[in-house]
Image 1: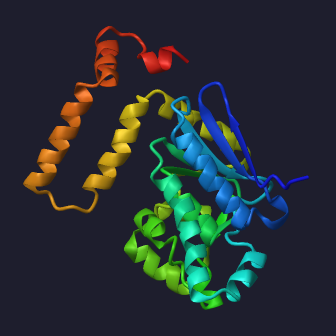
Image 2: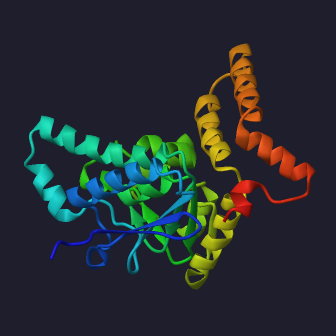
Length: 264
């Protein structure tokens, strides 16, 4: 029987749930899991019926990052082979970060190294109070290179200077303090908190959410210039003229639910 390393379900609301299914090794990812996440995200990103994507881990861990067997194989790779391997990891993270759908990391347990990168790549992250984290690459004589663009955006350069250099472990409360997690809850309340967050996400226009993510990517870290103002004016003008924008305003004025909620 083929090992099922990624379990994917889509409920009637259009919420897709991706569960990394290697609990015996704390959902550490190998080439197969990386490939399946990439392929599945590609399918979900292009599926108009999917409204939101949840990423979590089976068992007691979120993800321990790269598994030891993969690291051992990589140690014997040539420079070109190692670069190709890193590109696959980058593509996995990018497929999550650039998804037009809202992505929610449900951090049920430890997230280490590349597993922490997965958390940072998601739009929203909710963690169990029992979860812990580390960017421990430097302790192995390595660096968190591929995940760094996502992690630095999440926790800021100042925090990256500490945790990239020390490799120290930190808890869920600290993860929330530095911006990696949006909320920390008791482990047994994690699914209820996820449902509450999904309720907030599903109340919004799906096209608007995709455009909002694009807006953030366009505007973040750019100086407040005339070109930025012109670009954002063009984006809101286009959104107001869209069918979804018109429906949203009309439903508000008519005191009714918009079509994307009423139709669920």
